[in-house]
Image 1: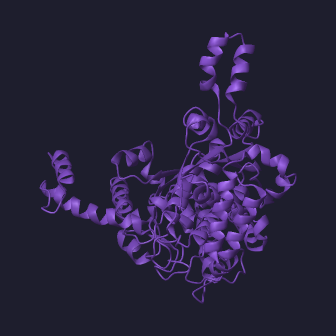
Image 2 (image 1 turned 90 degrees about the horizontal axis):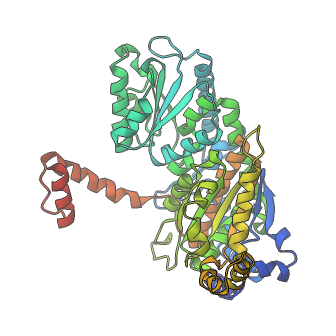
Length: 534
């Protein structure tokens, strides 16, 4: 039963809290081989996590008690795993090879996926070779991608990770409704050579439509009215709304594609255009490789499952409510922001699937920066702060063709080693004495130079950041997020928490138009509104 498995995991974690990670290597000679594995071009090392062998076995028992394998089968079978909305969740269908047979609630969907994918390929290739042109017959040189949340973060991550240094077709992104975001994106662009792709599942997202209207006005000032639709593409589950807006062409995706899981679909059409179809297909293939691993590998050798179990052990067993993402690759600078949405929007929940309180911690707070930058920002907290914050180190052996990345990955390894080993006051004092400090000075400074250590981390290595390894990495975290939802017994695929603010914003916009707060506004909000409209 899950209750018994949870109790056993918590008991194991209490015991492990009294031990040191470094000592576990001596106590468990097989630790490294048991806690490292290769999957879809990635190498994972979870041996620096806080669990002992007994703790690891307790975590595996929890996965079995919660029927991770059965829930995984339900996901891939297209059952209504998003039970609050009665939907299947089939992002794996979007990257499956041709000939797959996915179904959503019993309805075959793979043929439709393949048809949209073929349409994307045809359009992307036509635009890149100049057969698809703008209103004045000129070739497109820039794509302006307008979206927000899952319609923005995924494509941004893909483009930043894989973009050529000098792309034939550049991509620019707008998400924020601050006019400055649009102004920066449009700076230096020629309307005649700019394609606008508007991405919105419902085509009612307020922020996206406001930005789309601004882009439409910018184009209308420079282009003939009869050719304006050639510059507007809609990507949506509501194609009739996109057409009514003025999109000359639409690419569809279905409601069984969650926003934060949609980057495998036409949502990333802009990336398929900018990178070329071959690279985009390789990206899909890398994710499909991770899907196969997730489906076929036993739980104890399953990369997404082990990442999820390490998270559960830290959050619920050892009460560590945050995790940081440290990609040691400039091209992965968007990964922390992407994972914030993927994990926190998916698993930031307080009730179980049956509506009862979860009764334990769920998703931790996710934050991060590229590793070398983060070392000079928040790593001080990671090393010497009172809170223990686990770290995911994402390490790329070669980030540039011309120059080995030795300095970069050596820093990553050193940070992980330092977090685990730490330094005692006695060691710090001895080092100070050896450097010429007096006894009194060494006594005074040693506490400041001591590190508690015993801080866990996971390392994910790849030889190069390619379309395949990027696809595998993102799919790895998607499946990790799903497994965590299974263990917490929550629905990882709805996001009701974002709705209340949207509703209240509409009411506040009416008040802002008149400059008079509504009678039901709280005193603080009313006062702030008066000040902003004065």
